[in-house]
Length: 443
Image 1 (cartoon, rainbow, N blue to C red):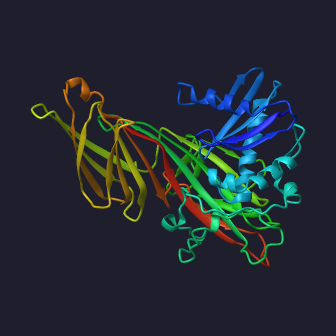
Image 2 (cartoon, one colour; image 1 turned 60 degrees about the vertical axis):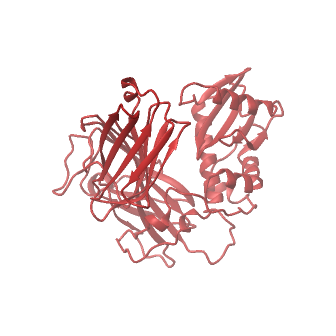
């Protein structure tokens, strides 16, 4: 049973508040945010207690989605409900951000009224809700990890000449039922998150990949579709398939609607999706990345005792294939406390570096970096009373980046088809994106 649902911004602003049973107050919202912000650890607990109430929350796009309940209900049920709420808002509004929530508060309140009655969950089904929701979404253009102007969408049959417009995948899926003139489109994203730790001697200490196949369907009454994965896909370390380059994952999970009768023999997924967004498959690769790491960093630190200056030279090499590239590359270098000035020498004019006193780090920003290229940066730091102990405060370096049209696991989509010819077949798009979840290099 749910007492209240509320959505907060990262700064604690009240975006949505719904009291289903009349036994709460807005002071609970402030109490929750105070408990979150006073925690010392970076990872706040999903479930917390306050004056006999249980707070259960999830965080998406920097927003807190929170429910409170006086009973000892299953937290997994409430977490699943919140994740479904996030997915529905994304489907109806096209994106998820503070601005989107503020502009579409009437639509979100209508959704909550249909989903929950007096604190009891009624439905989270897209097919049921679209028959009752009448409010139209206010469309915004959000910042997206998948900026299609730089990433590009390509057909499942590698028809690179057919490129979708940049706003195609960010429009609402569940708009007006009578809306005319929109294309029937299906987007399939192969998304991978890379977690890497590289030792000070350059050896790989940890390498994990978390991946998923995410389907976004704009096609009403979509028939069953067949999705062909890489035939040499192996699950587990003991399995071996095919004669080509093996693509191995340690484990994978499928959505309950996915049919797997052809998966073992031909690596084909069959699904009959409803309108909206659906995660078809999640997979993981641990401690063994088949391809080369995307970046290697070569640092040099020199201390000038006569002038209290520290010289840090960084050479960054991109080891992607020549036709691939990395975008939005950011290098964060922790530096000793007490730095009063920074001078820099960068190898190209489109790079930017700045000193961030709040985090005691230097941020080096590279908009775009092609495979096989090298870039360098020289930072000269002036530190009064520079000591040997200050050198221990340098590093480790962390990186953030995006790799469009590239998967580190090697997983590819062979085809996306319908078994029979459809009179109004939808446009089908496949996209590959890898981004860094945690990429740490020790100095």
